[in-house]
Image (cartoon, rainbow, N blue to C red; front, side, top):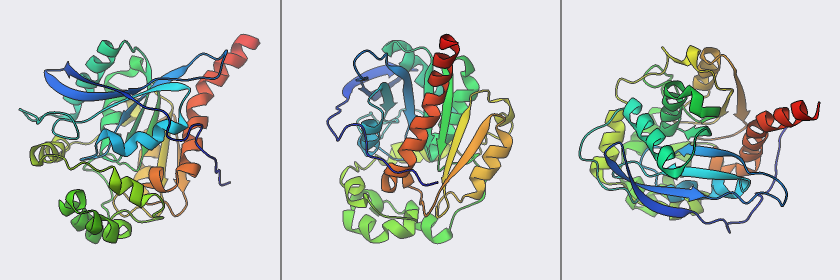
Length: 290
C-alpha cells in the first residue's frame, strides 16, 4: 500500500547551528529542537548522517516531518560549514566523533538514520555504540565494498565535480545520476554548497576497503532498510543483502524511487520512517497501560 502525507510543519522549523570540537575535529552542527503537541513528551532524538559531499541544508526538509523529536546532524570535515580536515579518517573514528558530539549536546540514546554514504556511517555507529542506538534507518545504502555496483553512466556523472558547482549540469543530468522521480530536484539543487576537494576526497578515502558485512549480524537495533527500485547508484539488490545480514530488520521498497527518494518522494518515504520510529514508543505506552 502506498502511503502519502504532508509534513507536520512547512519549512518553519529552523535549526540551531554551532561549531563544536569533537574527536579533535571542528564540525558545524545543526540541531532542530522538538516541538511536540501540548501535553506530549518529545520522542527519542534522531541522529542523521548525510550522503557524500552533502551539506546540512540538503537534508533540512526532512526536519519538517519530525517536529516531535530533536534532529541532530553535522557537516563532515571539509563539507558545508565544517573546516577542511587536517588528517584522514575512517568510519570507526567518525562514529566515535559522533558519540562525542552527542556527549557535548547532552544526548544519551538516539535513533540513528543514514542515507547513501551516511548509511555506512550509521551502520558503523549502531555496531560501535549499541547502547546508544535505539532504532536504525538505512536509506539508499549498501554494505560498503561488498555491494552490487550501480549503473556505470550514473557513477561517471557522480564523479564529475560539476554536479556541485554547475546547477544546469545537475538539472540536466539529475535523472541519469539518481534515477526515479525528479520531484523536488530544483529545491535540492538550490541547497547545494560545494564541498572542498580535500573534504570530498577524504570522504571517498574513508570508505575505501570498508565493509559492514562482518559485523552486521551483530547489530541489535531494530532496523528499517529503505531502497528505491529505480536507484542507479545503489541498486535495490543491496537492500535485500542488508536485510539478510541484519537480524531484526525489514526492507521497504519505494516504487520508482531513485537514489534521492527521500527528497523526490518524501510524502511516501517520510511517513514510513515516522511509523517505524514510533513503534518502540507506542509499544512502551501499551506496556504501561497494561
